Length: 137
Image (cartoon, rainbow, N blue to C red; front, side):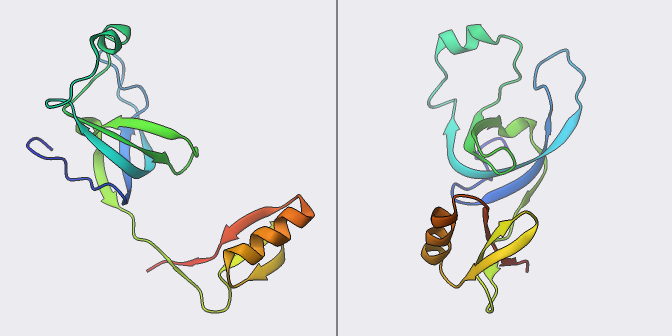
């Protein structure tokens, strides 16, 4: 990924990334899933000198990818050059018979065809998990 970053904002990717992306540490890889929000070209828009001084052994690259970590639910930053086995994740489609469900203690308590109905049910109960039922292509 030298001249341009092959990742695209608005798409989700699954990839291998070092557990600790620092020079001198063993490269144990772990699977990560990220919905890309932005990509920063550090050649055109470099990081601040103070940031570079804070982590001088961090393996940086030209492309800083920011997005939502789909496993941890937080915003995360990754260097594209440290990513390997990058695969774009396909989006799913809601199933015809149900689009959303509320799960309570490992059982489906409610199903709805639109998200607002499912949210209203969940807010009234104040417990449970809202799930989107997806069909994988």
